[in-house]
Length: 337
Image 1 (cartoon, rainbow, N blue to C red):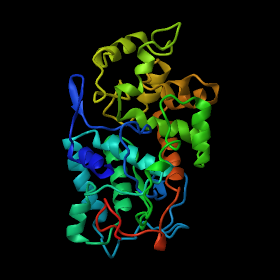
Image 2: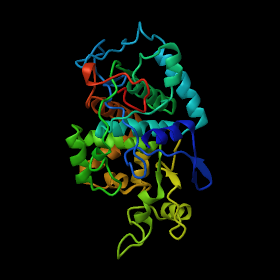
Image 3: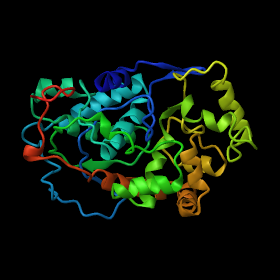
């Protein structure tokens, strides 16, 4: 099932969304679809934004020039393919980021079949580049193409040897969680409150299903029919797109109502106006623990970019696989043996 989900994402199979169509892709919340794992994300280094010293290798044995001799054109091949995929389906960027994030939190263990550039790479470098490295580079490039800062990617990771869907429950942020619950979950992964708020900014692209926010726009509680923290006009627009009586869970709406096709800081300015789609997003602008970070990133896009990349670096240091801890998949959808 995981492989088929990603095939839908990459090939651009569409679902209905009001007056336009898009593919499945939201960052944190895995409701409805379990996306395949990257089995570990390599550490990444921002260029020109983060004061880290670039070295050729890191403690896990990864390097920037890992494929210099075995597959010197790896990044160019991947970039060319994902650039084309993005023109075919913009939601590819949000979908890739979602998969990238989910694997850090849950090692489901399988990686996407025919992942973006795998077929193109196999023609030039058969059996050389891991599926996890392909995904890491592809995600970086896709985000950069829609406006995110670019970073250099360490390479040389292996694909994982474990695949357990049972690991998903309790390890992925949910749209109804409180700030305290979210902080606890992120802390368990070695991420700070600031990291959490910055990574939440990934919702500046991507989409969510109606059932992830229906409780905010219908029968919210005994006092309010609509969540009082949500802008009323925005809530009415959502009701028109997601009618309660003719509910269709295939309908999806953009997480960022202002600039859904740009990786920018509008996500945070939306929260300040009550335009957060998911409850777990909107509460970040209201809770004293996270409000200051939201305001800072809303005020200055470069502050968001800087903290986003730093958070991605930490995110990417979770569970790197090298050596005998992994393998180079012959087929990204299944283990070699």
